[in-house]
Image (cartoon, rainbow, N blue to C red; front, side, top):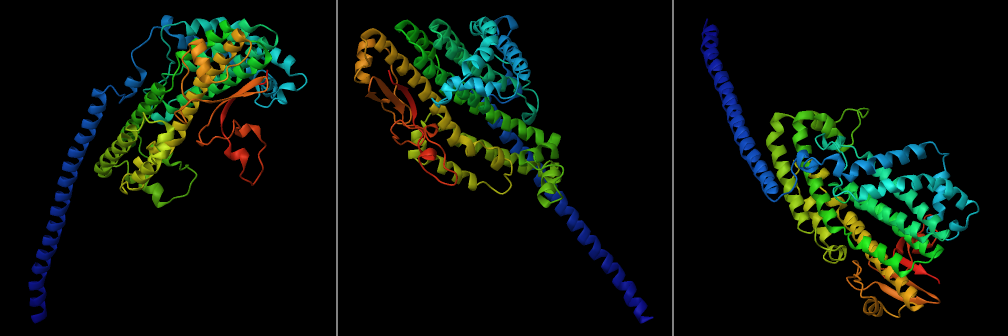
Length: 481
C-alpha cells in the first residue's frame, strides 16, 4: 500500500516535469522560429537593398536588364551575323574531317606549315563560301545596332550561346580568304576580309558575359595572325594600311571587360534566386555533383538543407558575402594586369575568399575571384594585339612612303602623325628593332618579361620539362623584307 501511494504521488510530479520540459522545448522552438523569421526578414531586406543600389548605378540585376530593350530586326546586325554563322556551320559540317585544319595552315604561326604542299588548293575550297557571304557580313557591320538573340530570362546555368563558336568559325574562314587574296595580289580583297574579321569581333563587344569577351579575344587573335601572314604574302600600301588602322581605332577592350564582369555578377544574383526554387538541381550543378555520385553528407547538405526555408537566413548571408566579394573585385576593374601583379591584388582576393564564413558555400564557388587574374591578362593581351596591329600597319605605311622602315617609333609617330599607343604590360612603348631588311615589334606579354620577341609557339615543347617553350610569351610582329 505504501509503494502504491508513493507511485501515485510521483506520477503527477513526473507528469509536471514532462510538461515543463515539453513547454521549454516548445518555447525554444518558438524563440528559434522568431529569431529565424526576423533574421530572414532583415537579411532579405539587406540583399534587396544591395540589389537596388546596383540597379541605381545602372548595373544589370535581372535577365531583363541583360537583354536590354528590344531592337527591331531591320536595324540589328546580330540577326544577319547569326544567320551567316549558321550558314558557315552547315557548310563546315558537310566537309571532310581535317580539311579545315589543313586549310588553316595558310595562316599558321609556324612558317613551315605555310609551305605545306597542297594547302593553297585546300584554302581555295575552304574560303570559297566566304566570297558569297562577305557582302552579308558587311551589311551586318553597317547596321546601327548589334545584339544576338539570347534567352537571358532562362536560368543562369541554362543560358546558351551557340553563336560564339559559329562566329569563331566565321573569323577563321575570313582569315584564310584574306591570306588567299594577299597571296594572289588582291590586297583590296585581303583588306576587305580582314576588316570583316575585325568587325565580327566587334559584333560581340556588348555581350555581357566573360565567355563572350574571351571569344572576342580569340577572334581578334585569329584576325591579327591573318594580318601578319597577309603582310608576308603581299604588299600593304599606305591606303590599305590606313584603312585597317582606322578600323582598329574604334576597338577597345575595357568597356567590354566591365560589361562582362557586371553580367557575371547578375548571373550570380540569379543563381541565389534559383536555389530555393530549383533546390538540388542548381546546387548540384554548381558543385559538379552528378546524379550517379553516391550518397554523401555534402550531397545531402546541398540537396536538402541549402534549398530549404530553414537555411534561408544563411542563404541571404551567403549572398551578402558574394556582394562584398564582387564589390572588392570590381574596385580593381580599371587596373592594368601589370599593377594587379605588382600590387599582389590577386593574392588579396584569394585571401578574402579564404576568409569567407563556412556558410557562404555559394560565394566560395561562384565568385569570379578565381578567374580574375587570368581573364584580366587576356584582356590586356587583346589590347596589346589591337595596338600592336596598328603600329604594324603604320610601319608598313611608312615603308610604302619612304622605302625603308623608321629607326624608332618616335620617328614613325612624327613622320606619319598616327596615334600609336603604349603596350599594356609595361606601360611603355612596344619594343621595336630593325633586323636585316625588316623589323621586330613586340609586347613583353603576360609574364611581364622581355623574352626578346619569342613566344611559346616559337619553340617545341619538351614533355616533362619546363623551359623556354613554357616561359616565353611575348606578342610579336615580324617582317623580314
